[in-house]
Image (cartoon, rainbow, N blue to C red; front, top):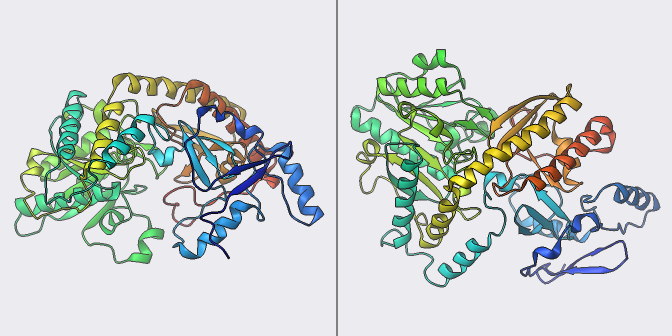
Length: 497
């Protein structure tokens, strides 16, 4: 079969006109507009029964998933033999983005409440980011860390100064720049181990404490700190020296964090685990115990940081006495471009010497120039205030859904624009129903819908999404036979699923 690289995809509209979508995606104008209501793919199956069913589906859904005989499915089937099957994905093939919307290869538009799993905080294809990417790519992309470049230093200075001025991690001193969230957490784990070695040369202070329902990454150190048997077992044994506790259980902290503990890593808000928010008293108790035993306290804000809660960092609502020694970030730091960072205080930094850690790509001038712009935007107090306002709009909408479906919508959790709806049933049919009506949402934890839209989303777009979500719930709850669930819509499924 010929390659799909030069093949065009087609869809037929209601006027039977063909719209050509080139595989070489070109810039498009925002005037593309609200195309999801009219962009309906007409099925081409030869069986009358199949055609009749799909035409009925077209009449009620603005964005039905591409059928098995569509050009999209043909292209996906061509690609599948060459790709390691690490994800289960629904059939739409995303090809364009702008602001809070995505378009698939058949020109259907989707309002995106996922933001690439809390990554695209400034939305898709931010114009200034695209301009900077082009300019820097023409100037200098990569030199390795054997040489200096100006942007890694400028980014590090910006992160430290903005973090301190926001009255977050008051002891923030230095930054290690890497390529991803899991790398940022690997660095944090290694730095904690090194501090333990320096303070206790015998090596007895080497244990790392993390918590159930956490997600810190997929590399071996980060995975060892992520106590989900379903994902640890295929790669066991894990790295020795990890202990797991119960999130928000203050009574267990003294026994859990002992003199052999070199580090504690915790998410102020567990994203993958179900949008679980740590209580201030729990984080304060962790800080106090770490002080008592000389352990490093690491806050993983890879998903909940960088403005998502309505503050620059999720922990900055805490008193200085509860601030961390190490802070990790990624996701929104690059708005889709790979970058991560590990922020440390001076006590940790002085234990890390040349040769202890490194990275080939981390800190490259292209990634750092982009992150410098993105961090500047995300640290804007006006943007953060707007996030808090938008949280209220979401909560008002969620309260109406809870009132309408009290037997299904159990709890509303989260802060800012990292929000979760705890359901009493499997939410995957709602994910499907929403997508086929033009809204992208994801899941987390056990039976939790997660909403992490771009921070630039407007109140009008929130209203549009909530209307679609209500219709999706109506379909999933009242006509369940019409909706199949969508699998794979979270990084880590709960044990047993």
